[in-house]
Length: 309
Image 1 (cartoon, helix red, strand yellow):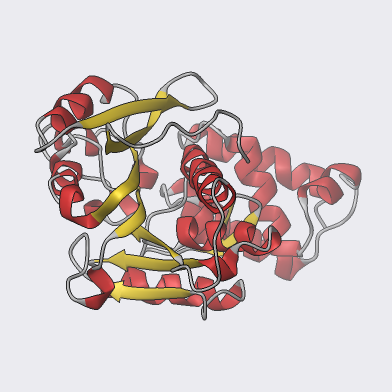
Image 2 (cartoon, one colour):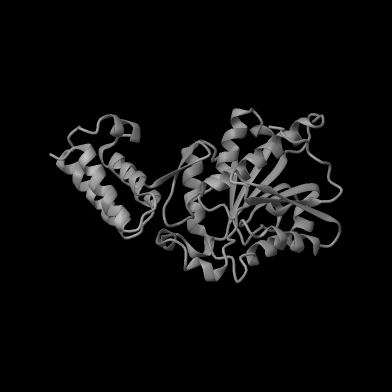
């Protein structure tokens, strides 16, 4: 029987030849899936033999990865904000950079709940995740607010135009025990009617990659829904559609947090400046220093102190 180390080395070589830029990690994740062990165990027991069934399962995973399929789809899960989410072709795979959007949303909710007294009967904060996909943003926010005992004071809505994506979001919400805390609605951007009443916080990770660049992405991206990636000629077509809704969608002191591409800061500032009334747009960089989350709100909004968590 082949040993763990032998299979990892041969798998890494195959995936590197196939063009993977994370070949060793991919091989470790796929072998771990096949034998039911984590990466730490694999590394610590490189001489352990691997049975025929596990080796065959590993081979099937390697073949799929060599064809370009994302490891997250092969495994059926992706870690995000400390949680494991089910993922498949119904929704975009959550990206690490999107964790900044959740962190900023958590800080915003915390500040709003502690910055002023909230007498009994005060309405819940209304938060909407636009283009929820797998539900990662809304669910991660709900989970962290639950830990901080803030969830009872927040009303969460998750919206997507894809019925398939919403099914995936509901499955993930059930898995993380927050299905009763998140209303899931099918709509184009923001809903109308009672669910579309003004929001205190709008969160959005909408498609922002220019159409011409989508086809130049790594082949793994071709397995994901194109509609979740393609943002039109300049990448901001869908985001601009959301921006024009904000004057009616946000409360008078409401805030929108929108994920953008690293080079789209000036363009989104221009789009916000064109909104009726007085608006501000500040772009928060991610851990690499690249612009990532645009904070859009009326210029009259109070400034939130830095570092509130």
